[in-house]
Image (tube, rainbow, N blue to C red):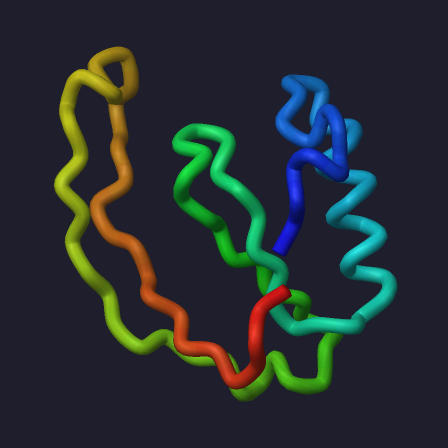
Length: 94
């Protein structure tokens, strides 16, 4: 799991640090999944999947669940997300 305290600037609007961390993780190919804090809601986590990792083929979608979005979050947008995938993992995420 990414520790945002160890990567100052990871949530910066310029994406420089998050790209640096993500690129380094992809290139090492040590884990199939990297959990990163959500920039939108920092108590949530996003799971990044490394397609180059040998265990990636064992990762699958366990289910798709509807998410209730508050329309106030999307009042200026034409489209809003409707679903989220629940990923089952073969390996312990980092």
